[in-house]
Length: 403
Image (cartoon, rainbow, N blue to C red):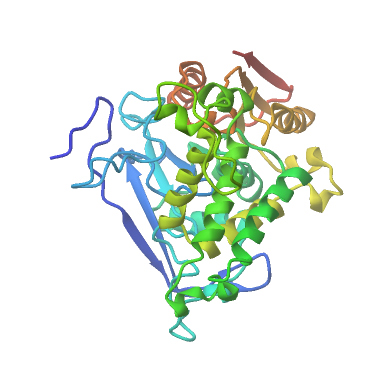
């Protein structure tokens, strides 16, 4: 029997939906005969007006909240935010999580059979963009009979999807919560992604992306990719507080120990931590999925079609916005969130902005910070009490927080 905490949505069961019609992609290719894995929490009201779509980030999935039967440590990745009485209250909202195509948690991805060959897609799986994921999500909502979302919510890459929803399907979104995100990746961010990808591609077990046929997994590359990525998710302050310059052997001896003076042994606690994260990641994540998702991150840039003018790109949006950033997030810095806010204000849109003084770096959007959760709760209270969204006002309006 699984012990459930207060506010849990309880034991949940993943669902899947099959789509036989091809999904056209930005690349000009298409994905034929695909499945989307998803979960829902709460109850859709009679008016079908209380649906909230939550978009996942790089290594997350459709499993947002609750636990699976017989798996007590299977809490959803945003369980601290979603549930009865929580900031995204499932007593008031019908919450939907969708696993994006190309991911490795149930939806059709590179590890699944290509209908044309019967063999795993591998390197032949088509390139996906954020816009393609949004279109796939829209198709699932169509099947569920949901024509308009009360809100779309996402952090990091999920925030990019939330932003894209307001541009691709503006009439289908009343509110957008864009958390710890950016209107595009900086060159530095793309560089980090490329280092991680090269670690995977140069692993001898990668076999050009067709490692499934060889019965191997490029774990060495995945380990390094995760280690590189994980460094960027944490702030310098958190890393110093958790590990500092402590040696691993300090945990095992009462007094100072001599250095190993080798180039391969684990000496520092931060090394041990990163290797643990890398080992764990390599056991469950798919290498082709990592390449595909990081490329989608790199490609996202709604301003590109407007000569780099983000305000022009955002003119299509009619939703109301909450934009949240964290002071120590150097991968998706507050300055990037302010670019989104400015573009919305230039279009005289309704936007609330919260800049949370938190020490945790990019991972802060996943953590249980009461100030952050308070902002999200207050905004979603507003969403819940509105029967329908009024058109964007004729005067630009921003409500700012520095917490």
